[in-house]
Amino acid sequence: MSNIDLTLQIWRQKNSDALGKLETYTLDKISTDMSFLEMLDVLNEKLTMEGIEPVAFDHDCREGICGMCGAVINGVAHGPEKETTLCQLHMRHFKTGDVLVIEPFRSRAFPIKKDLVVDRSAFDKIIQAGGYVSVNTGGTPDGNAIPISSHIAELAMDAAACIGCGACVASCPNGAAMLFTSAKISQLCLLPQGHAERKKRALSMVETMDKEGFGNCTNLRECEAVCPKSISIRNIARLNREFVRAAFSEG
Ligand code: FES
Image (tube, rainbow, N blue to C red; front, side, top):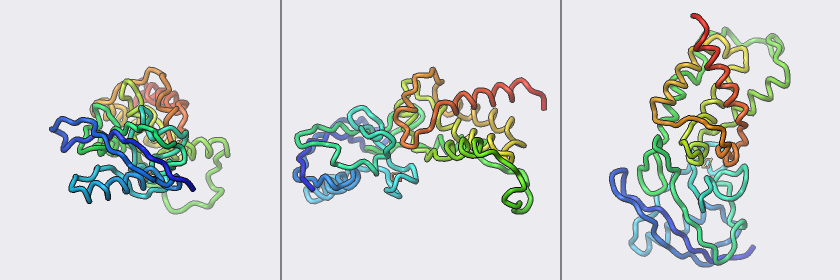
């Protein structure tokens, strides 16, 4: 274990209407065993002792599961480590003297609520538009009653790994939510239980995505590069096929 000294430039903004700006703080003797969020906890304790309002940031599980955490570190959503959420990023990846610029996930569809906290309820609305199976699928079937190839099961499980953190939107110059939406559509349309509602789902989720102010995908792949769960843009190709099939078919 070793300790490092850091300079932090953190986006401070009182509320969604206020103007924000970067404030500079210094932290000494930060253990490299700490996670990034634990480092922010230490900062907040220091700020509280000094009578300064602590930095607001989102978090819940701190295990890379829930998708609540997220910030842009030196221009990269979730920081410099690949396939890693902010809560799983450790301070051993930084060195003493580093200057870290910490900003919220910025996007038109994710208004800033306070400091590093953004409103990601637009994602909830996309899910509410069709990210579920509502048809009656009967009782619990035998494990082998509906044969699904291991390849298809793997693709569905890979898509289901999306935790909805929003890093894809924050890193996309177009502010597109295509990676998120396509993962949610893929995990359902690949499996037989999701087939009955696939047309309605594709049309409704894409319509909601547009209505919530997300941009369009132009295949820049920034989303895929920062996704902590390695969601592939192949899912976006699948979403496009689902949408075209639904838009040009009857019923
Ligand atoms: S706090 Fe749950 S994924 Fe980071």
